[in-house]
Length: 212
Ligand SMILES: C[S@@+](CC[C@H](N)C(=O)[O-])C[C@H]1O[C@@H](n2cnc3c(N)ncnc32)[C@H](O)[C@@H]1O
Image (cartoon, rainbow, N blue to C red; front, side):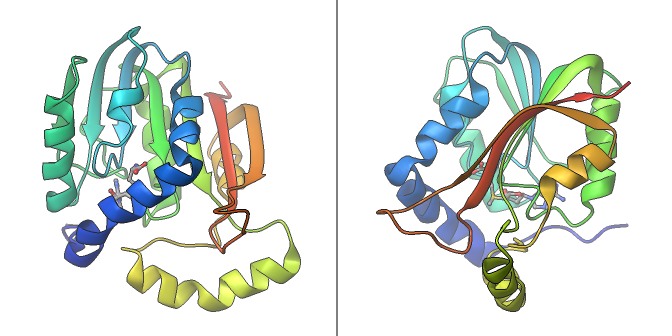
C-alpha cells in the first residue's frame, strides 16, 4: 500500500505562499483555468480549496480530492463557504475514488508538479472523465530556456524537500499528450512577481481532451 501523504510544514506555509501568489496575479490564472467549466467536476489535489470560489454557477458538483490531512481540513472549510456543492474527499490522483467516465471536467492546478506518479494519475483522469470530457490544467513547468532549465535541475532536490514534493523540472504538456490527451488550448507564459522571473515562473494554462 502507498504511504500516506503528509507534509505538515508545507501544509502550514502553503496558504501564505498561495495568498502571496494570488496577490501577484495567480488569482487571474485560477479564473482563466475555470472559465466556462460546467457539469460534474473532479478537482485533483485541491490543496486549501483556493479554486472553489472561482467555479462558475453552471458547475453542478465538485468532488475535490486531497490526500494531505491538514490541507484537506482547510479545503473542507473553503467548501463550507461556497454555495456550490463541493465534496472534499481523501484520496490520491493515482487511485481516484470515482467511477469510470463520471465527470465532465477534471481540474489540476499546481499539482502535476507534485504527484509522485504522473503517468498513473493521468491514466486515472482518462478513466474518470467522459470520452467527451476535458482536463483543465494550470501548472508551473520546466523552463523552455536551457540555461534556466539547468538551474531548475540543480535546485530541484532542495526545492522538492521544501515544497512538499514539488518539482521544477516537469514537462507537463508532454506528460499530458503522452498519456492519451490532445491539447486543445494552451497558453505558455512566465508568471512574474513584481516584474521578476523565478524558478517556478514558466507556466502553462490549458485544456486537453481524451484523444479517443
Ligand atoms: C502546490 S499544492 C496545490 C494545491 C491546489 N491544487 C492549488 O491550486 O492551490 C499541491 C497539492 O497536491 C497534493 N498532492 C500531492 N500528491 C498528490 C497525489 N498523489 N494525489 C493528489 N494530490 C496530491 C498536495 O497535497 C497539495 O495539496
